[in-house]
Amino acid sequence: MIEQLFGSKTRVNLLYLLFGNPTKLYFVREMSRAINVQLNAVRREIANLEKIGLIHQVKKKPVSKADAYDFVDGDSNARAKFYALNTGSLLYPELKSLLQTAQVLKEREMIEDLKQKAGNIKLMILSGVFMQGAQSPTDILIVGQVKPQVLSKSVKNFEKRFGKSVRYTVMSEKEFEERKEIGDKFLYSILECNHLVVVDNY
Image: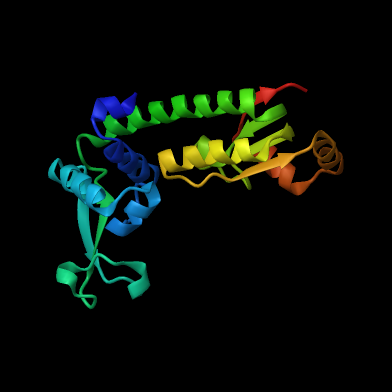
């Protein structure tokens, strides 16, 4: 849906990456790897976004040569070219709202996909990256019997789309009940932080 609006899947993936990490500095190859798109395509979209003032270039000395490959004029001793989201842009608040809405829709799509294909899910809790970065030891907690390959594929698709790393934890009903009974620190740290129960078949 949102690809049709922006006219470029690469542009959309870049925006998700940048808006998901608004204070981070990226070099071009890093963005290319993160969204799994060829370098030249990423460079073109960076130029487009820079032209409208949505991102800006930052030059700084990398900590090491391994940290950056996009050096000014090909000189590895010069300051490297990094790019960052321009949060002062007039477009920033509107695009942020639009991308957040699109992410919510994609989250719902992923949840429905898991409910239908991943197996017998008794409980599913979202936290961490799904709750504005809540301090949780995992982002998805699933209780039940699931198909690992289906779960892994769905999560990887989401990660690729939004440029976010998603941690997930699977427990059997027996393990979940045992952890609850002993007051397990890992489990209660999830339940006590900001979270959302999206499946509850207990």
